[in-house]
Amino acid sequence: MDNDYSLTSCPPCPSCGSRQILKNGSTHHKKQKFLCKECGRQFIEKPQKKQITLKEKKRVKKLLLERISLRGITRSLEISMTWLQKFVNSLYRSVPLELKEII
Ligand SMILES: [Zn+2]
Image (cartoon, rainbow, N blue to C red):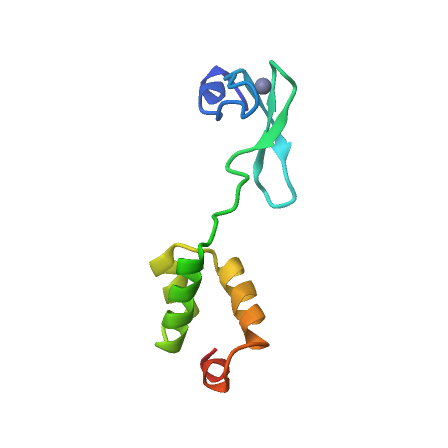
């Protein structure tokens, strides 16, 4: 059950910075949704995806070529398996054969 204690653990409102936040159910992806009591804004904690930089993408390619497992890559670069799988899929069309073989 929500109580005053859980209120303090909610993130501040991204619009007005208020800490008067209510828990407001969850998304399809099981992310906690919040509702700001001050301005009525609904938001999700940490909604922004981790931005994968070009440098990181290059590192991923390098690790793939070095036959590091996908799981190993997600751990070492702290990226999600979902992202990595999408990235690998997108590589399929453009990469040389030797990379395809190890995936
Ligand atoms: Zn607000």
